[in-house]
Length: 87
Image (tube, rainbow, N blue to C red):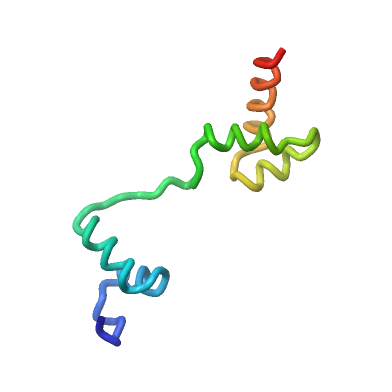
């Protein structure tokens, strides 16, 4: 790796600073020339639904919404659907 980061295109310079040179080379080797976008949410909605049901304590919808990046309405709806399944 050259000591001068200015020799790299800006996206690779950012990646080197973020994850290091070796990881950047792996990403470059796998994806160079391709365009891709990353989903806003890290977790699948089915995983979040499961975790919300597990972690709900009767009054923490706001905290769960903030934690997982969903709206309180979405959280409440998933809890209602789950409650209806149990009944």
